[in-house]
Amino acid sequence: MRRTLLVCVILSACAVAPVKLRRIGGGERSRAEVAALCKTIVERNGSPAGDAALGELVHRWPSDEGRKVSSGGCEVTFAEAAGGIYAVDYFDTLTPASAYSVTKLPHQRRAGVGVPMLGLRENRHREPIEEHYPPEAITRPVTALARVESADGGTPGVRIELLDSLYAETVVVDGEERPLAADFTIPWVALLERAGKLSGSWLASLVDATPARDAQLYLMEPYDPRKTPLLLVHGFISTPIAGPASRTTSGEMRRSAVAIRCGTTITRRRRRSCIPP
Image (tube, rainbow, N blue to C red; front, side, top):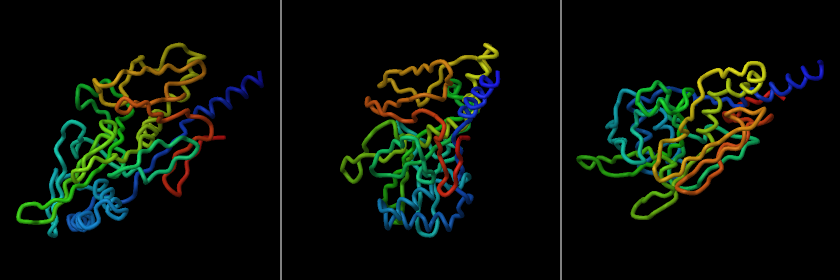
């Protein structure tokens, strides 16, 4: 009996949610700060400094400003929603993926132009399709891309596109087709953190066969008729959030969030949150 109990305790410890995401500190930017970031992007677009300014501007965009702000001699405009482009108000939070580090978990990224972001939207069923998304949250890999252009009257301006990183692998910049930067792991793991309660569901099922909630298939990304649906089925002594997972990107099988196991962690830089040993 003691041995059985010990095994259960150890296994249940391994089932604890292994991830913890922390939002970057600070709040929304004032118009003057937005203007300063805008000027940095105009002057150094595509450089490390320009990318850092772009990520910060998107992350701290004033929620009451809509799509456009003109201040301090610089104008920022977000592109309207279209195929492969998210509206600026679709997500509740947008955070640079570089704000987080992943250890003991394959980190799937794609080098290219733009700034990879974690887009997180609370699933409040604001749209009919959201009934088919996980109730914990809607997380997406997003790439912020800045295009420098002149606004009305010759004022320097920046047009920002919030691109769906899964929609296309390349983007045309200045007439040249270039790879689109992306981080596929951070958004996936952010969802796993929200689904932490499911990590112990296998143990509860040994005692009570009644599921904690009704069974359902969930879309893990927006429906794309160009792709073939992939169903993942976990085995015994496992859960819906454990085991290898694969993501499909433009017809290419791209391995994304892999097994959640003891020792897997995702941390805010210089801060750590680990699974119990």
